[in-house]
Length: 232
Image (tube, rainbow, N blue to C red; front, side, top):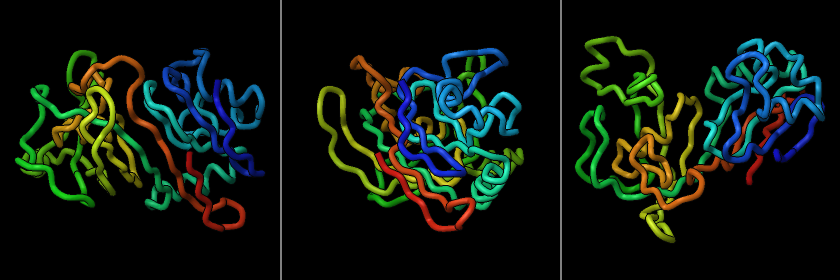
């Protein structure tokens, strides 16, 4: 079941659990965060979003990822919040628990030989990878220049600490202002620390859910312009 973290006249802050799609992948698909939220707040499904079937949802989390999702309750709010996203003013922070990689999956370009001290930034363009293009891989700086691979996405590692429990090596606290599909999962795997219970990127399988949570969002109220932040 989803959580309602905050209700404002122009937006909702929702909590998506593990094993739920944020929005439908095709028309008529049920069991999504959008569908459950719209059963209580039907106006968000009427917003003309990024796609016709996505309503007022401003950003998506992976099926396996839990955490905070922002939704607009009207067209004006959606346009205002979308502009903030485009301008890098919508901040998202994640908590991840990672395992030390013993064998890096195929398709990753070289990365630094040792883990730099936090804070630091991982940056790359991305390309689809693997059967069904289910995964992504970073595009190296050299290849990006040769191919014009598209814009780069930054993953800011704000802090690291020692992990706890079976399979856990480190806990990462991460910030994004613009996001790409699987960005955090892929960038941490590139760094050599895939997220626990993430078989797609080589994480240690200890049972249970993907150890990734969207823990914090910050943006400006679309009506008043005042800064808003929510944490879980």
